[in-house]
Image (tube, rainbow, N blue to C red):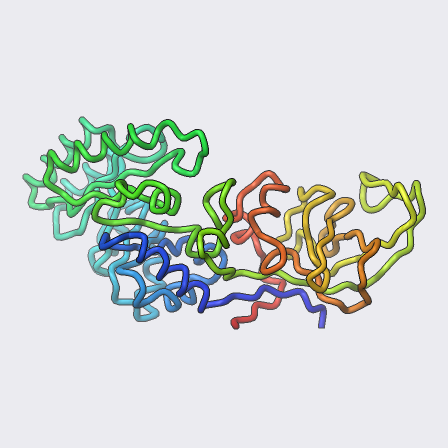
Length: 353
């Protein structure tokens, strides 16, 4: 067997959900399980966190349907709401909560009124989804008049995870003003705001990445936040090559040896979901010993520096997990852990531990 595998740890998911609930201090906790549970498995993530959270958040209705068909009875929030009348009626049939973020959705609701749990989304500065505060107040009055009073108001922070954040307080003030004017509950906090801005917790929080053992911050690790690793990516050494000064490694000859050494060939590549753009110097570990990637990542293989490392054919190489912080890998690649988790393909063996 090739030995390339993803290890998923439901116990860690449960612990991280419990950590989010403790931070929420009484606010409802809706665990975001969209994008196949951030690459952990939609149903697995929901099962692992059931009992620790009040409900779940997904991006699209199809994800909510999978949870309902699996037997999840907890409240489910659909973050992008409905896309047409058919989805609107399905949301009602499945007893879902939907985010209403655009004027066309309000118009569709007014054309087809009926019972539905609506969270009205505000655009407070991210300029992605949401109604401007004045438009949101008008939409709320229209919905109330039609017998569809929203159950809450929400927004999404653009910079809560930014060390130089200068926007979150302004966004929060705008959201509080609208929620207070309507007398409705408020939901604003993602993982970063849940941890960093206690006054933003309001009535409901929506943690995501922290549930999956990753820090939302560049300056604070998951371990420092008392989060546990839930996703571990490993492979095996399948060849070891001796190299001399001047030898190059991989496509494009982008890495050149400066001294005699050893190069290990690892049975994992971008065909497994490891990022092709990972540069030389990206951290890995062999039998717990730290080392780095050298040369370009290929579809099925990557190469690492084994100089001074005790290693043999068949030994385990951790690409991220316990010895290698996924957030450090992400930073080396110029991306975020969310992308690393979500881009794993179906080829690695998935093991639940």
